Length: 268
Image (cartoon, rainbow, N blue to C red; front, side):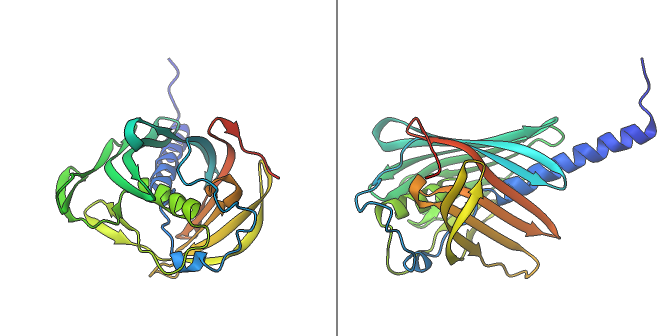
């Protein structure tokens, strides 16, 4: 049996460490950018019919993620169930490490009612997070680092995945809303609030061709952190790109393919 050299073993360890770091960054960044609704009001949506998409439609989307010279493919799937319920999954794997997320929620009109969220990391480190919303209670049960927490719950409290579908659902039902909306996310041992500012409408070059997008920037307390997101109005406000920079390390997530209600999306 060949004995691995110390240099090769060190390279392998570094590669696995970078892979684990990539997944950790992706898990922290991906699809975690709630919106400031007042910013959307200034946006032009003339290409979106007034009666466009009053409900979420099932979709499958694949994203390419890059950071520190490594790449990861993410697959995100929204499936409808009975009586207005949905299951949203998101995950990816690189080398021996991976992560998988599942959010179960129900749609009532233009509102999402979350039920549960599970985040599982596998490989070098097995970590699990859970968030459970119990009907009729004002608390949320959250599992973080093998410890359960009781978090305060409001009508607007969502999980990491369902909050993005709430954003899409809001825009689908009212492309030019007025006023502000605060989306709260139960994550770990606390409930987080975010503010996102509208930057402008941009034509973004993608693997599918040029796509009209809405560009938003999330505000951070730390000036060295930066997060941006681009949504495609013509594709049910599907996320097209996310860019997060922290410690001078950019994490870029870009859409490579998608289908909505079984029909592949195409650039106009």
